[in-house]
Length: 331
Image (cartoon, rainbow, N blue to C red; front, side, top):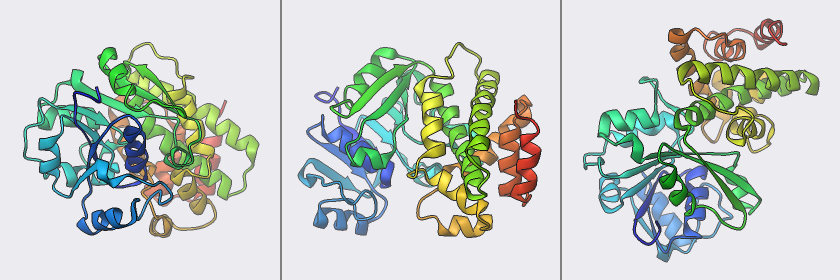
């Protein structure tokens, strides 16, 4: 695939930077869209992303940078989407070139806000992309651990397993292990939900409720995740696979998890507004909680953990009250 396709990374954050690093282990050259020209100029001057994963050096001679998203989309035939979900529409609304013949790879671990649509569904509906040419990437894999060359695990989802395997070959390496799957929708929903549950885990940590309570939370969260995904997209899947349970665990417990850290601030007494202002990066679970809550109005799955997080974030319910009500449902 690397010899016959031109790959573009869309996004300038830590996850986009980590994926660009992995791609350049296998590709001679990539195209990289960043919104800000000043950020591109600094990148070229310093030889690394000036704002994210600054310890990762890049050979900028192998990168074609551009702040023109249409120029990038026109030059590449594989588009790796790696921008935070809250800003996804503001970027893609600028696209006017035909994407129907492109391969779209979503590394966006969220849902399109306001639309309450999965990224793959949105790209199919708005840009006419064939679902068979859409892929998704999920973990367990923190951008920071890619930067540190620690073992990382990626699951590449696509309805076409051969295409998934082809793209996986662009990312796999000494420290990066890849798995393929056809469960595109399940992977996308799990990536949203694990961020919501990581906020809950962070709140518990901030309130010093202890490891026993945290263990009960996660064991109930994985069941809640399974019930929701099975209701929305019924098909055989093993919820204990790494892309579901593994990604949930690393997001709920890791010091690199911005969703856990966001929740921890709330548990320590920060208001939701203050915690959001304090965060240097986007806590996707804040937006994901509302999206899944709205979607679940149609499916009516019992989701006490999601409901508790939603109540805390959007209804200003005190964390102690929401967690007590949630804990009564644990089994």
